[in-house]
Amino acid sequence: MKRSHEPPLWLLFGAGGLLAALLGPALILLTGVVVPVAAERGVEVLGYEATRELLARPLVGVLLALSLGVVLWHAAHRIYHTLRDLGMRAGQGVWWACYGSAAIGTLVAIGAVIALW
Amino acid sequence: MSEPAKITLEVQRYHPEQDSGPRWQRYTVPYTAEMSVLEGLQYIKDHLDGSLTFRWSCRMAICGSCGCMIDGEPELACHVFLRDYAPGPVRVAALDHFPIQRDLVIDHSDFLEKLETVHSYLIPAEERTPADGTHRQTPQAMADYYDYAQCINCLLCYAACPQYGWHPDFAGPAALALLQRYNLDDRDGGHRLRERVIDAEQGVWGCTLVGYCSEVCPKGVDPARAINQNKAGSAARYLLGWWRPGRRRGEDRE
Image 1: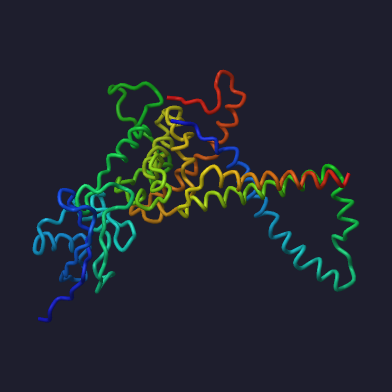
Image 2: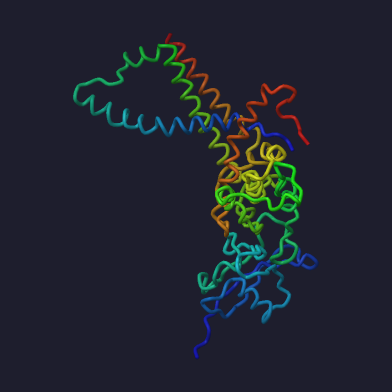
């Protein structure tokens, strides 16, 4: 029997799912409610300058880019397997499209925070 | 006395010596409230068409022989009632994903071969002889695997699993649930032997956690849970394999 090479992808999928479940509701509350309500009252939360300065700190920036990355890997894994569950003969091409776009997204995110340094 | 109520059954027929492919045949069957779909099939065989072929034995969801697709859902024919499908037509077909031998009878050799690969028997952790007496365990230890031990090999879970349908190499829900049944037994010492199956492409990694297997199981086995309980351990073994000396990742271990 051939050993499966899925475990690393599954671990990234698991990490991304956990992060999305933990951070998703907080992000919705923050960006959907707190920021606009505060802005209406003339208070700036997560303003451009402050956020830029925060992200320019290497540790914060890289951690954030990696967090975004694993959420992308989660999405890639979910989409790839859902296509297979729906009966699509998802071969190498689809595999590369799913995981490749997650990899590119992760690299772009890391590149973006490095550009702020 | 009034006429008994009637239901129409559309039964999948296939006699390989004369049919080029499966076809549907309609029968009208009188039924009472307590009659199962299996009893409907038996009525057809006894009174309407003796050539209809299907497996059955216990009539009480214990033997696992009468599994078939009823209106597209995997069911034990003895476990569902005609009244719930009245007035029909209700479609009764052979289990999905298996070759048909005749009418509703499938060839389950593929499952039997897979069952052999998962070592679904007790491999004692310590050397024992009959003189040691009964191999006892506590009720708590038994509770760990009891649910998985309820499998009757009816194969409804294989008919439900889309991944088994598309990738017939996949060991499948029942075999992997039985593997987990023995791995969770505190008297068993066969974990290492079963890791080979768990870690394989055809093992737990063939499962995408659709979960339909657990939904259709007439015995509440929950194979989806059994399979996915193994993914974390298998992933840990994969990562450890990176620096475990003398073992290459991805090697074929026969």
